[in-house]
Image (cartoon, rainbow over all chains, first blue to last red; front, side, top):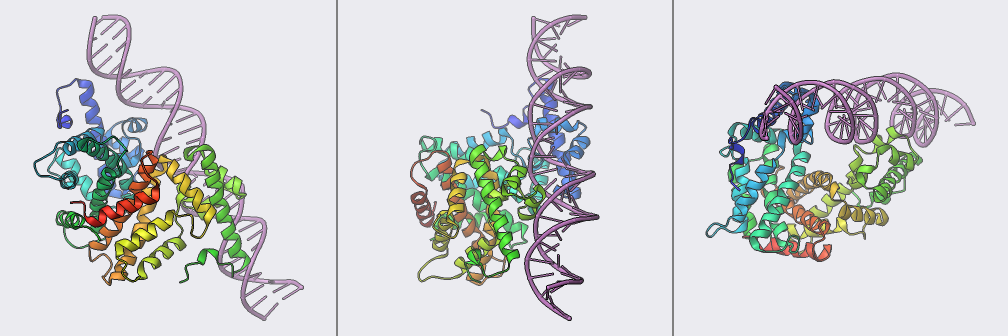
Length: 202
Length: 202
DNA sequence: TGCAATTTTGCAGTGACTGCACGTTGGGCG
DNA sequence: CGCCCAACGTGCAGTCACTGCAAAATTGCA
């Protein structure tokens, strides 16, 4: 599996249009949330701004939240693949640090979409429940990948899930720290958090 | 603040009736979820079984989820108080282990209600998003308490939030491990998880 | 060009949740 | 004891997220 499925253009008109519609809905959702706040936006508005019917919105996203903060199946696959691929001298927790920080960094695939998603994420505490809900999917995908990397049967060992859950919790704590106007910038806080975890919280 | 606000009966009829209604709604919700699964239960049914109107349900709980897994303000206060009270030679993470394990142990206040809540929690993966959403409230309460215990201004330091978030994540990971039919029982897994965190995940 | 698969869309419906106005009930106070 | 106020319960009307269904439009392919 290639990691650049998102930029893949070597396919028919049908597939391209679907990508365009999805992206239009995504951007429309981000637009509106930035303008009016998440709770004041309706799915009808999002669909309308994206130029599709209200019903079509739900052909692309299972919920309003998903259009704003949802992680696509392709992204999940990409993260899982990154975790499975072992680098020299990189521990699992180190790989997780790199991958999770990368999710928030606008340097990857879709710069505009991710930059705006990040800004909204940090600015709207009301999205916190949806955010942690979405994290469950990420956690499951990464846990399965780590189990494969370690060569253990799915669900047999506790350790992989603990490792992934703790890593995600650390990043999320940094996000909430930002939301509450805490000190430092996100990147250095994430670094500090992982350093603290590596030492042990005893 | 006393920790036994929940068993307080030294108040008027009004207050007692409110407690009874709340409890009736709680038990009705647990009943129905056990019978039919969370998504198949409606708030009207819950209200009806508890003997109140559909509208009244929402005077007691802000959402259907809250009636099943919601943590009351009193419980939050109690947890926060437990964390602030320093015991000899007990580290913050040790106190968190004790408190979070206590939340799942049916030995505390309301045995019946908590036993059933725990069983449902472990048996219904579809409640996972609501569960993590509820955890945010617990996390905020415990973070504030830890900040007070450490004598730092709210939101100024990253460490308290990291500590609490990681501890909660560890417990939640153990719950999900159980949900997926993982090995071991919940208590010993939680012990193992905290031991692992104390050592450091480097 | 025409057929088949896929996608879009409208429609009708369910259920969570809210604001409002009104009736009821408990509690304090004269 | 009775009265009044505040708190509580309730019905109603409404909004909005979300779903299944079937018809209409669109696309890929032979």
